[in-house]
Length: 81
Image (cartoon, rainbow, N blue to C red; front, top):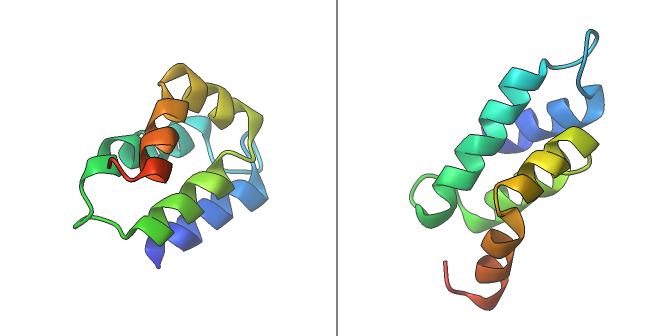
């Protein structure tokens, strides 16, 4: 539940002076990318929900692409991870 709430807050407030700072949002994205193979840390529905909310922000989507995020999603969708 905490991951859902955090990803929604980041998505709704955005990045910058009035929203969440980019470093914290990027840190949460990195946590998600590292947790992809560790189902005991986060359920798959919570994982995908969090990613989808975060990737609504262009800067985080660019980070995701730069970190080979599409290959992670592909493996998740075909059931390899």
